[in-house]
Amino acid sequence: MQDRQFIYLDHAATTATRPEVVDAMLPYFTENFGNPSSVYTFSQKNKAVITRCRETIADTLSAKSNEIYFTAGGSESDNWALKAAAESYASKGKHIITTKIEHHAILHTAQYLEKQGYEVTYLDVDENGIVKIDELKKAIRPDTILISVMFANNEIGSIEPIREIGRIAKEHEILFHTDAVQAYGQIPIDVNEYQIDMLSASGHKINGPKGIGFMYIRTGIQIGSFIHGGGQERSRRAGTENVPGIVGLAKACEIANQTMEERAKKEIAMRDHLIDRILQEVPYVRLNGHRTKRLPNNVNFCFQFVQGESLLIMLDMVGICASSGSACTSGSIDPSHVLLAIGLPSEVAHGSLRLTLGEENTMEEMDYVADHIKEMVEKLRTMSPLYEDFVKTHEE
Ligand SMILES: *Cc1c(COP(=O)(O)O)cnc(C)c1O
Image 1 (tube, rainbow, N blue to C red):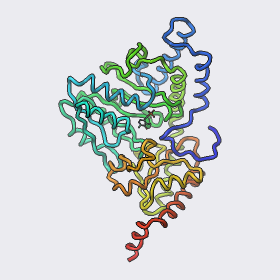
Image 2 (image 1 turned 180 degrees about the horizontal axis):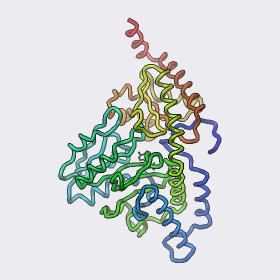
Image 3 (image 1 turned 135 degrees about the vertical axis):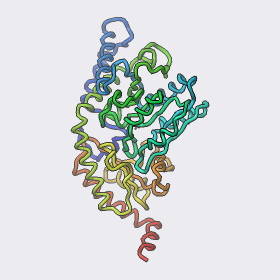
Image 4 (image 1 turned 45 degrees about the horizontal axis):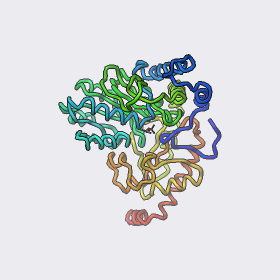
């Protein structure tokens, strides 16, 4: 990809669109602009293009092509899954199970549903951010209609026991949705093997365009439409198809899945090198998330006696783009709900730093970043009265 003047380590927030993806999209703006619903040949070609894109994406999940629905991204897919499942299954019950570490697209939708009279159980996670299966089993009730657990967490990268959750949901005949926005394209997903009924994914997290994503909905799942209007997407998601976006998304999905293995290997090596160096060279640091059951590209630390925001500003000054948690919570003063859910006290959670890698990063960059973090954390601590007190009491 492009030569940049900075080191981009915020791939969980968004990624650059691949040049091959842009190339694939371009003709659909200026030349092949026809509305796929029109009857003449020129436009009908675009209908066929969309069908091929659907097949390409379905293949990556071992799904059927008519189980893929194009949406405007991860947030829309998450909203759709929860709201439509709640509405369609209300006669069976009004209880939903999710977790405390979901993305806000799930959490805020769940809160909205609570206001509409639904009951939501937010499962705790262990100290590594992994859902406790026992607690899930205990939470299930006769009126439970939906379980929604993310495939992998966007802040701390922990990978959830999706296979077990799928099995439990199936046993109890409860719908199972997973927000796979971070996992899709990074780790292999087979919707049948994992018994997933609905799955959300997004283009811009996998080097595709922004504002386009998809939802997988298993055949036979009776959930209604999210956007009412025309008959597009088998009448489940109205609106003239975003043809360039769909073409770009399919290309991004195809490449992400073709390159997954090699990319993961490279990213894991860089990730582990960065983690090892920081843990060895910086005192009073905690790695957040599971050491191995984590996304290949995720690194997340808490540095005691350091404000995450101060560290981000200093990193920015040397050209390193990082995050304190999720892009959505940056700029807010509340500590991350994910870090609180794994049991960190809020003063520790405030010292968080998330570095999410991409295939264009290099080992040299990892060393550059580790060197700077080490130096900056030391510097910030010399300015911290809390650290001074801590050192004094530990010297005595
Ligand atoms: C980014 C993200 C979303 C939202 O996706 P958009 O396409 O930006 O709406 C949802 N869930 C997770 C886990 C994410 O990382």
